[in-house]
Image (cartoon, rainbow, N blue to C red):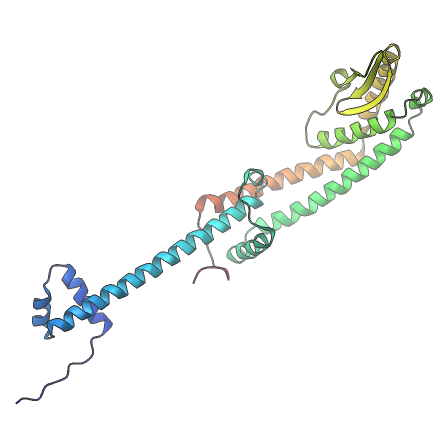
Length: 278
């Protein structure tokens, strides 16, 4: 009786070839005949190759989904950094995750100008807050030193000083952003405050309650004082610096928006980070 020769183990490449051929309509008996293997061996390894393929496809699907979600997180964070889109975000990352995502985006794009734009913008925003504080302090000093208010204060109108200070602080902030702000023609007015009484107002700023017959004279005095103060404020160096700082913040915001738009619209971020799916 001839000695049986043991065939070598079937390699993965072989069973993948059998799977391919079987799916191309080559019958299992024919494959067995052509390759010199038992039909049962062919069938077993074809089934094994199918299982391996399913596992590989499942892993590829998981990896693809993980990559898609990773890119979505990066794009969402880029949207959050954009001053023009941040206000419209409804599903924002937590503060902790935001810190992680900044690290991730920096690792993906270490040489992007985004980082210098953000740093410069933060510095300018801090400078803006300091200038606003300086302007408001000067407004308070100027209003409290205004001698024309003495006649109103003597008449018991103690609310006009803080009322003017609040209104002018509002003006400075809005003017520096190129907004119109208040104007004495339309916004310096009275509102009913009870029988025979009205409240003096400049826009949102409520001042004192006075008798109706005294209101017009008080309004004329306030109009003259406020117009002069507003005219002078626009000439202040601190106001000019505040306006220039806001212009620079806007300019950087536009450049930042353009860079971040590339990330959001491409939807794929080049490079790698430590959070990238393996």
